[in-house]
Length: 438
Image 1 (cartoon, helix red, strand yellow):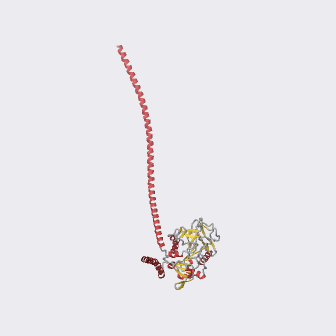
Image 2 (spheres, rainbow, N blue to C red):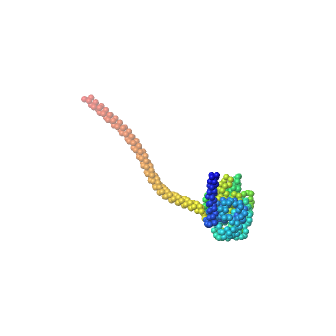
Image 3 (cartoon, rainbow, N blue to C red):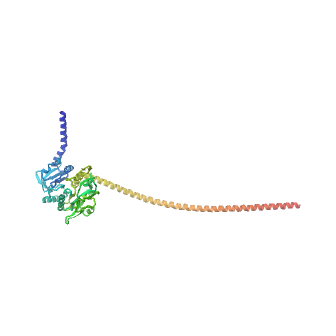
């Protein structure tokens, strides 16, 4: 019995230790201001898939979630209430403690509106509130819907974008892969630019389940065209954040697309942003994939046996566009340092290359001079060799002549010896004759 009491006491202590940080967090959210503020509107949709993951990812921010009524929160994960503050009403009028407020008065750093299935259209008051909120300056509004979940939601988001003066729109079609299994599981990635590089922190793959492509729309003429790299050169205030992979295509099953058809080549923009200069340089993020809500939203970290970086990506978006940055600042600093080091190395290599070039030119000049001198000496040696060969020929000729002279001398000697012999013989005969006469 004593052991049972000890075990129960230990379990109670462990439970208190685990719950304490959450309760402290909840109390702190009421007393202290956080690094950034996020407002999530779930009052226009009937799906909140992944909201519990998102609130945990945004642990260092003040998170507000809007529902129509308390009845909608009954099935929520209990932990959400520790990481976020639940408010009720609509964008133009919701409860905030014992008072009422509106989005433009609360003025959060970023507002996320993700509509999986449209429950209720935006009222005129809500649209005016959104416009006032953006006009406050340097705020971010993330609007998302996708055709395969609810075409009406896409129409509602596009209507809202038109009213706010955005040139972006979500097209009435969806993207699929060219593989035979899980064709609607579109592996996407961050489009890396100088502005979006920090979004790649911890992010390699993002799941976008049958997303709709983001298009460029002329509000005045209602003409649509694909949002491509070439278009970005004209619209400097628009940036593509996430694109589909190369092994994707526009679905053949839909013919409602206004900008994209099956023949449109990948990659396709899934998430894009636009700076609205007329609304205080605030930013609108438009995505044809739902960050939360619906089936397999962007925040998904696992689909079957495949793993993705959805939670990290959503946190990166919030950190970047609230300008708080958090750990992204360190990531950016490290990247900057690495870039500076690489630039220094490249400069050093350039200097070494220049020095080597000078040395090479100097050595080449000296070698050329030595080669010229060697060639000159080689020519002289050849000339001397030729002279020697000529002298050798002359010497051989002289030797031949000497041999001829020797032969002639020999003949002359023979003649002389013969003459002497004959003379001696004649003398001997003369003496003999003389002696006979006596």
